[in-house]
Amino acid sequence: MCNACDNIDSQPTKFVNLHVHSCYSLLDGLSKVEDIVAKVKKMKQSAFAITEHGNVFSAVKAHKLAKENSLKHLFGIEFYVTPDRFTKDKNSKYNHLTVLAKNEQGRVNINQLSSLGYLEGFYNKPRVDYELLQKHKDGLVVLSGCMMSEFQMALAGGKIGDGDIEITGGNIERAKEVARFYRKIFGEDYYLEVQSHSDSRQQKLNRAVVNIAKELNIPYVVTADSHFIDEEDFELHGVFIKIGTNRESGETYLDGQLQSEEEARRLLKPALSDEEIEEAIKQTIVITDKCNVNLPLSAPIIPHVKVPEGFDSEANYLKHLCQQGWKRLEIHKKPNRKEYQKRLLYEFDAIIKMGFEGYYLLVESYANSVKRRGIARGSGGGSLVAYLLNIVNIDPIEYGLYFERFIDVGALDLLENGDISRNELKIPDFDLDFGREDRDKVIQFIIDRYGEDKFVALGQFGFIWDRTAIKDVGKVLGIPFEETNKITKLIDADTIKESKEDGRLNDYLEKYPKLFDYAEKIAGVPKSYGTHPCAKAVTVSQLNDYTAIANKEETILFQGDMHDVEDLGVVKLDALGLIA
Image (cartoon, rainbow, N blue to C red; front, top):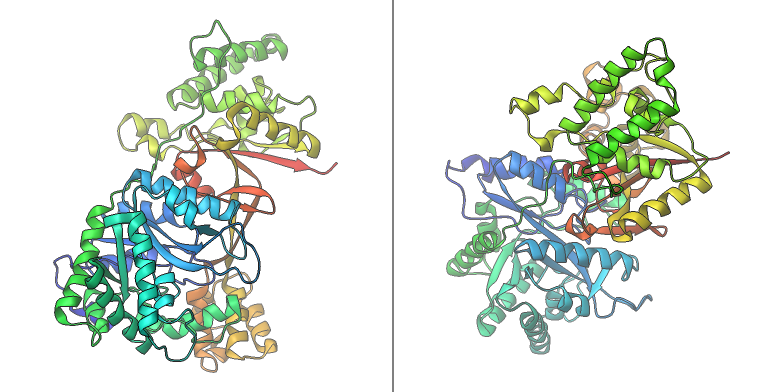
């Protein structure tokens, strides 16, 4: 832990980290969201922003954890900005821009911009352009950005490499043009960004940034551009980025930890005066007070199903379908029909009280939209109502299947007693199998009924787990593959921590101490984002009201995973295509 954190008093500090990358800036940021929250609390800071590269993958997780820890989460992103998003060639350059949402309109606009970056501007990175920024500017607070920003690159003459930089008079004039351009778009919500890094190039840039800010009467603010948690993680981060990009170890920002106020003040010297440092620190609170966004974390929100004429509610229509299924399956002829009747009343009561009648009708509508259907797998086979609706073709009473494995009926007592909220109810989840052709028809049926702007595939993250971390870190550190291969075989399906504790790695711990230290910290970090094989989601309003979308191999994806979907109250559907 950094020394600066040990001397913090009990009062909240007057500094907020506004430019932070978590590990969801894939293979660039190293900080796990839960570690960011823990460090912010330890430093007695009241809030934090997370500004991933081009995406909002971590937003729901960060917002939820912030609320649980009585912290304020600032919804943000670091955009890749290019003059024209439709120009896609090797000469097409992009720069970084730090953007925060001031209000709900700003949050939706960030989602919209990020989505368009993937859908229209993607070329190596999800890029937005000046036209899109102008169109979706409302509710945004914009910081000029890091060394890779258009503003700081202009100050450095258009390129920042490993060597020193020269800030000429011409460079300064060009940087002023950039500042005026963005100030015209974003007005008083545009800030020039200085960064608290000891790098000599950044010190020169900071001095020039403040000079221009004073001349143009534009406020300036300090950020750390954090990519890792603690100062001691600097070398680890250098190893980490080499895993992802094959860059040389150490090619990263020095002082890129999540900073305390004391660290930020110290690192802004000697380029800025005490008065200038005070102003840069103060503006972090000014911006934090400006930004007030609540993500729509919610109880399950199930799209309404249009019921036929003659039915005044979804509940009555569900009851009607159950009665039809009862007749069709001739349940009344069964010798144990009273057992069926008791089970049906029990299930129906639970479904209505928990508000899941719409979900049953939703699934029934698409499950019966094709003649040739597959089976249902998983706990959904335990629902008699689902059997009567022809969602599943398994009689749960005949096979002794439990409804409680599908819907947690015990949660009803907790809900009625006020021990849990509706937000904590979990939407049931039918897993249905279809033939490939039928699956496509089912998906089209859902799109036609609810709208293309309310239907999306779910993404999933691929993670670096313990054995992979050993091999990846070992490769960067130059440890022979034969050695890391032996180590991973010893670890087997356990974690590095478990393997260290029981002594099986003793022969290697002393020989390769950094290997285990680094690999243990990297384990659990996401490394990729792809398409879930069967999970889809249906929303009640347009997707950007919830989050941004991305695309992967022509599939539109929800920016987040299934846990984020559940936290937003969005209905998840599973439709797996089987190969005949």
